[in-house]
Length: 363
Figure 1 (cartoon, one colour):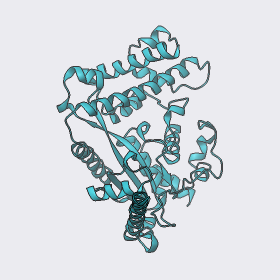
Figure 2: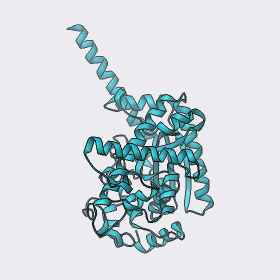
Figure 3: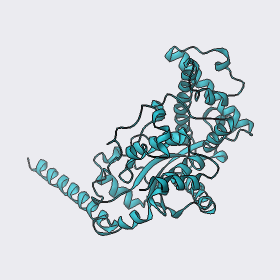
Figure 4: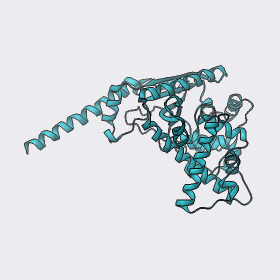
């Protein structure tokens, strides 16, 4: 892939917003399946950056109830860290005039870093607490899983239309849902069966015109659709782009020495697909997002402060270029071959179980 073409594609996709260290860290986190809990610095340059990030969490700080929710989660994080970790915070951090300033403090570089580290620790706790309480809210609401997925799908479809309207070089952006029979088949095929989590009940595929548009597409999604911190760690797969090599080439190489954890190893580029049913040459980037969905109509005001107004829906995103997408539908990679291999595994497991049962009954 031409680095000059990557650079040009990034510039056209980003418009007036130049690539920054936060973008590079985010792409690396997503493609390598890492967790923001392991980060030691945030990457917010202004309050506008913070507002956009909170907006992806569906928090509107022009609304008093959303400000109250943000401040409540912040206070919970401080209380936990003081009571259970033994940390102590200066007064201006314990009771800030504007919680958004902590995001900027967590992003500072140079100088004495104690305050920056403390701010980063607070953000990690806020991330965990917000996610935990959203899960509790999900249990308390009478919404079915199908209704939550409907709400998520509508938001994503609107984003797809916006992406096209902005002239982003995509060929298609479409979604699909697993049927009940497909879910059963997948559970039977997975080793952990009933304990398994099905991550791809709602799936969206973004096909770009060329391969150099793939990373800009991921960057667009994290800037405009979902907060990158809720990409599920350990569930990313990338056998399309050699990330380790690409981070050493322009325009990414400008940020190489600033990456958290240092530069990646040269061979730490691809996470091979571990799906045993896929063809050997099937290529794709896919990752799972806990996608935020507002459910205001199901939440009373008191509960909204304690647990928020947002629940999460697991959504799989696949990103691939058009040429690779075409190759993925040929020969051994074709979807009908995939389904044949999956059904064969299910049939063998069921029959093996039947044989063992008969053997036990005869003993």
